[in-house]
Length: 75
Image (cartoon, rainbow, N blue to C red):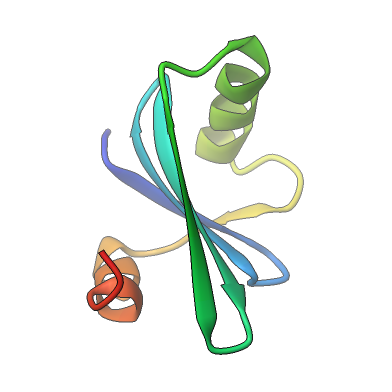
């Protein structure tokens, strides 16, 4: 099940969910990328992870290969 990959339907945020309490959020701002890693998530982030996994609201599934191709150079 992990890692799982999601993005916002609008396409500015991309998520790699590493587990039930950890994910990486990459926000695309023009040509720049802002990376935010959440580890040991508090309850609100755990709810968000659950919603991402269920593709509720604005979250849609994406392929892992697409994530790797898009963000290979920024880690």
